[in-house]
Image (cartoon, rainbow, N blue to C red):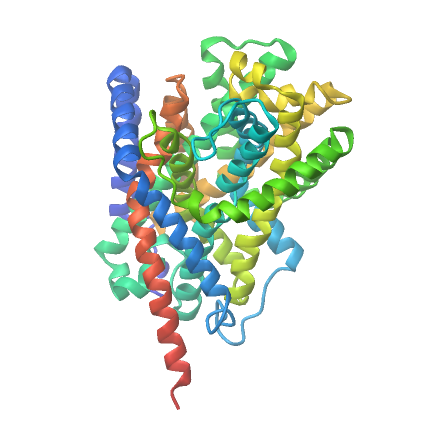
Length: 501
């Protein structure tokens, strides 16, 4: 074992204190000087998306290309582990865990909302008249693009980098280990600590984004469905409850309970999808999904590199760049988890299950749930109550809408709690180097996640929530390009070593 894993210290002092201090200072800044924080966030959002949006797009595209190269030829058969290592989980359990860890409540938030939004406000790539059949088809195509191959390639590439480096070189499952084939043993020194600090901030930003979106959606659901208005403190109440639940869970180590919730959640997810397919406009949904898949495949490369030059506004920054940054900010803790459960599997198998299958799963969810929003035309509700109300507006057009609303609230909450629990645990791992960090350390990062989400959501601005991902993912964009280089460098070395007589 490396020194980083055998260390008896409860946490790495440099990684913990730098990460914790900056987090606390950010929360205090947001509370004491909210207007200054808000204006700074707007400036960061504008600068990052306007000047660097093109690189976010190019990075995601290159990662997709890299993943397809990994699945073929000489790389696909390489194992994430040693020759005698065998998969720990069945194929079904393995895929269910990796899919559930990465999609969280975001798919329940944006699945019904995004296609309806693009339906009433067509993306500049397609243009055209709103609220027409062509606008509906194009809206679904762009939704597929945002939740398709590009998103999952970010996870898949980092998973391969971590899995191969850690399991063949006996390295700890930390974000910094993904750079072993780039900087070598320096991952055990200052550079490794800096990388793990970046991973902490990225995870905080990504989960704060998700927490804020979930709180907005739950608040909207209570108001829209039941007329319950929690007032200006409503977001804080919801975030406080969610934070208390997942912090208690990560503190007590209720892994079996979280696993049980995750299993139930997946069945509920499939059940909701099937219910909407059967009782919604079935033929329309099938036709729309099939058509959108065709348009997606035809337009994937030009959409991947479309920067909307000459268009007014910042559509690409508010949508595509936000999504790519969101996935990047989630990548450190999601990739660590997927790598952990993929030991003993081939690169081809791992990339296919992390790239192709989840993409198809997202297509099915968006096609049915988002397609229903287009068919029922919930755009009026979005204008009046915001995008967070979309799923509840769709429920009103279906049988047993009251019961369905309750199930949806359960789905949103449990999806989020499963991911938040994993994220808090991963944060504790990043700063400690231990696979089982101390309870107090786990609880601290659980509370920190909730606090950052609360101060961002308290601005009442979706842009403020989005900026958390975009800002924290900015350095990760450059780091992922290094990972892309390092993966092929390390695999080529491994192949060369195996070919030696």
